[in-house]
Amino acid sequence: MDGDVRDATTMMAEIGARAKAAANELAFAPAEARRAALLAAADAIDSRVGAIEAANAQDMEFGEAKALSPAMLDRLLLTPERIAAMAEGLRAVAAQPDPVGEVMAEWDRPNGLHIRRVRTPLGVVGVIYESRPNVTADAGGLCLKSGNAAILRGGSESFNSTIAIHACLVDGLRAAGLPEAAVQIAPTRSRAFVGAMLSAPEWIDVIVPRGGKGLVGLVQREARVPVFAHLEGICHVYVDAGADAAKARAVVLNAKTRRTGICGAAECLLIDRAILADLGATLVADLVAAGVEVRGDAELAALPGVVPAAADDFGHEFLDMIIAARVVDGVDGAIAHIRRYGSQHTDCIVTADDAAATRFFTRLDSAILIRNASTQFADGGEFGMGAEIGIATGKMHARGPVGAMQLTSFKYLVDGDGTIRA
Image 1: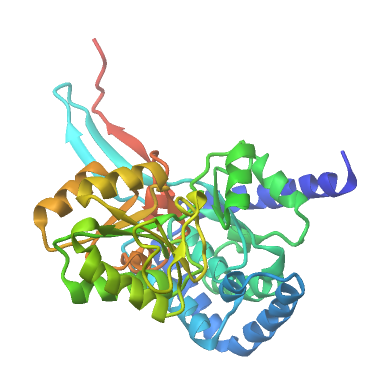
Image 2: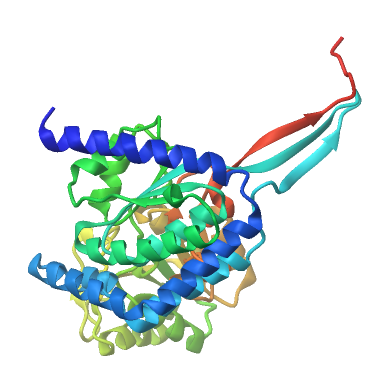
């Protein structure tokens, strides 16, 4: 075992042991203490905007030297508004009902037993992420709210920003009298630490990867720990014959262009053949006018500004000002396309036809299905969760935005009265 791996394994064991001890305390810490820690952390972020910006400026220089794409640099950038949003996200999480100890269901049995199913923390949550330093606040805050300890490994390009934000979370824990080891960060840029996290089921109860296909694929292949993840955000917007033109134009443009580098950005536009000549052509023209490269199938390639699509443009996550586009035969054509090319992340139908919307919602199994609204709402904050630790597209446990409630499991509490089984 080489030195980097050995050092990372040793480091992981030390951090993991502290996290386990902290998780044991957090599981029964008063809800008010966890709430106070979140509010104090938010105040610390507000008071250190300059320091966080300075740390982020170092990271931006590092990212530019690494020739990161414009989309990745946008994810990395922390403006005063984005820093303020981190603090507000922590306050929103603090204001939510506490999930720990919530009685999910209870019932009595004929034998006299009273049974309750109660929410309980998962334990230690490991989060591995690229570029987005705000994940440090979101993940740390959500883990704290749900009574979990967190081990955070941010990307090498966001190292300085992560340290600055983490310091604010530690201030919050300290102010509330909670163990400072409840939220820890990897103190190294070494990739060996990622491998150590993935191979530490004795210390970590679940891993959440936030990043590109390469990172998420690596985690899903190599983790010996359960994973909440999505591999790609291949989000579709289908504009049906029953769509309101003004709503369709607003939704399509926002879904693609608001922020192209997020997983909820639309990557494929599907147009009902019945509206191709009028509304369909207008939608394409809107995108071209906004600076989007539209890669269209044979029926769209004749429209002004459209680039002929290659076969692999469908089912591709561009994370850029590029969108694939195809003409389909009604809602069933859209469903067939999404089933073939989608990633079960977020898919949208724009229509005033209730029957078409019901068919779309019933016959697709994406984690998030949307009608007449932008796919960019695929976000825990927009769902009222305050923040999210990621979007899960798997079928087990958490699905869609993973907020504080999704970071809990449950246990059964059974009361009897000297009850014995015959």
